[in-house]
Length: 88
Image 1 (cartoon, helix red, strand yellow):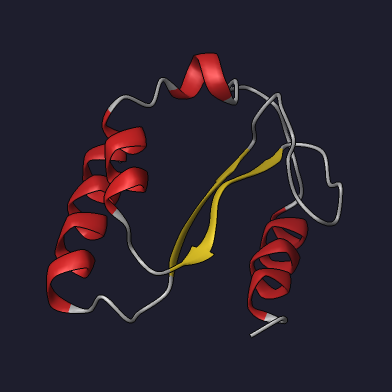
Image 2: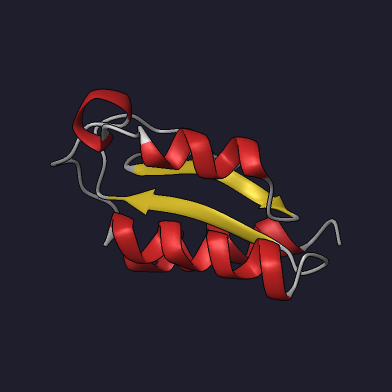
């Protein structure tokens, strides 16, 4: 799944550099999101694709950085995704 995210970022930076892209993990042990929902970690907020994000994604250790095995409601995941778009 991370390889797919990496390839998507790489493709976007070349073909659609003005598009916005972000990365959110759910069912994580660590939480980081505006709604303070447990089990949801916004790893990369919506932004134009950038080389720094690609480099960070290449070396990302999901278990170490966000932890796997938490739980959350899918409704809260969708709410968090929607709230990422609201300032736009």
